[in-house]
Image (cartoon, rainbow, N blue to C red):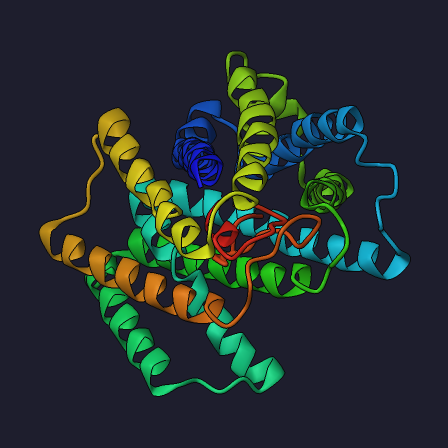
Length: 322
């Protein structure tokens, strides 16, 4: 019992640290001074190096379990993930990190909708009710007034990013028998040739100190963060993972206020707990029916979606990370 308690404590520390890192991602994106396409391209490049070195050092390439079919699914999930990042980072530019992050956390509801449309999963009365609560929260958070094109654009971009993340989660969930680190590696590797035509190397050469922030996005927010998340998923129950995942938006909103002075208004603030509560209820409802996965498994869970916040995740909570 004591060992189990110590294991959960360690997992809690690991996941909390991972979510804190995730919450600072927006600062790295903005401070890099690079365009969203350049940011994601170099995040994929440096992230692939970090995950590749880690996987090689741990011997994960031996008996990797990747078949052509699983590889194809991982690549498809990578397509959704990298463009999800592009849209989310564009939302940061259009509005603010706080606003985009809160809207982005509507991901679980798109999973419910896609489950009903693609797999004919029944939407219970309780889920429908929480979807309605989340919609009210989204309306309050948007705080959009006539002529407020910037907020409207940011809202649309963040919602589109959430849709792509949900799609990536659905695809990645079908990958079994493969360590999530390798699924994440395939996804970021897929992003390199995918975004190459959109990368502006001329602009990148003039970034100066911005390169430090880009390297940080790859090594810290893609390498270290995912390693911490996947380690924590093996030690914690799904319910605890789902709750700790909300450390991410809380840190993101605090960082946005502390660094840039951005904060949401009073009316918008009323919508935040509605989205958070509804998201948590839907997530816990979904994961209660499915035993938590332990690597080797899928990636990005929200089961949160997780991680693929991350690309490939092994648990439901993963879906909340970027």
